[in-house]
Length: 213
Image 1 (spheres, rainbow, N blue to C red):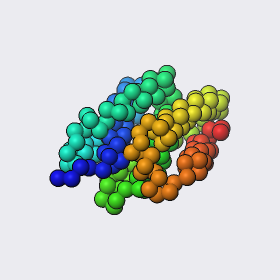
Image 2: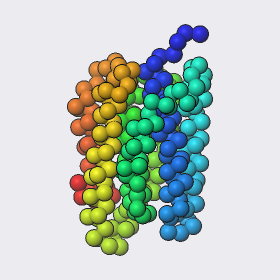
Image 3: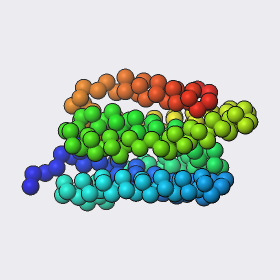
């Protein structure tokens, strides 16, 4: 069996660890939910994330690499991001999901463009599930409608989140993992242009949720 493409293993490891963390965070966020309906919704989404993790982990294993090996390089950086952006309440939790997760997913979709068809489709299928984003946006809009003052607090929180998320994405794209940088280069992606697209998409999401940029 030929050695697996290191860029593919790196990207799959990053996606797998992101899905594992998403499961952990959704399970924790469910405990912040103000009622059982919301708690049940988040618990169901957590179950979906662990299923997504399994898809990616199975593909990593098929390449002859253990999921632990593939995910290992990302543990410190992603844990640092989540530890530094721990939500204090329900609305901060859903805003973190809506803003931080979306930036991360946009970034991964861009990188996945350099993969061959089956692996690109696998990653896009994992990232395509937008139920939590729609759920979070609905919660944010309802909170702002009920109390317009909430918009300023959540907007400031969102700006902090996007700064942290873009910083971590920049580390991955530019320095931390050479194989991922090579994957981006295969497609001739202009990194500054990539970050402009990420920022533009973030701006549109903020507006859609009733928050200030």
